[in-house]
Length: 336
Image (cartoon, rainbow, N blue to C red):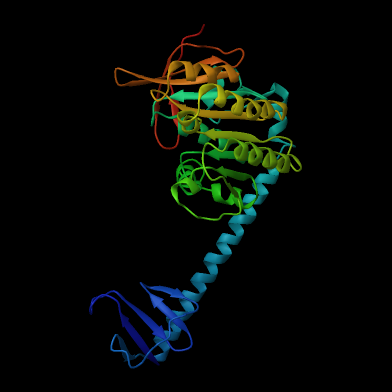
């Protein structure tokens, strides 16, 4: 059988093998079909005679490998769907209904909160950059997804692709939950940065200060989710971006209906805000809209968090914690 070697890097070992009427082998990966037209007169294509049995055997093995990977992906998707059904509101959510609280996805924090966050809570997550706010909200999202609870993820500072990368450290099946319709993004960041991606699970807003557009997108999405689900969760990451551009009174008027609607829907919602980026008056304004706050701080190279508001809790003391890309490890706390 004649094959054609396409040299890609000046006679180096990096090359693609093209087989007439079959396809291509590149870096030892079989590609079932090839769109490359072999120009036998082109000097970059080298004609080589290879034993038919070797080529056919290799193609057969690679094809089986390709089909096995497809079957594996299919089975994984079916397993994910079954898990979601098994953990739907009829089972796990009933436990949360009994205590009228929602888990944060961080068990030690749930303990401090005496079971979790009350339904309808709007919670400010306030702290310095890279100190665990993002991990906290992403674990909150993952916890809901494992229970079949959808999420509206509003982003003003990252693209959905970047959020997906973060979620891989916490929930490797995050994109599978997206395929099941359990993750909906409202993205006001991508377009403002010139990113023209189009994703079925994303509503794109032109800029982070278009609160009318953001509010409409959240309301339309929540209405859609409530047709098939009893609850949904909301993450707004981050309110710091619009707050940096808008006057405080205007920010209050724009955020107020978003917060109120989530409470009416009994959605538990988290809103991140950067410490050190805003005047104290602006932070207090955002606090006034919320049911409470989880605050992070750094002191003598140690990291601490504290709970303010959010009903009855076991402790409001500053509690030491450590963080990595997948979890918060919260230490012992002092009881009130």
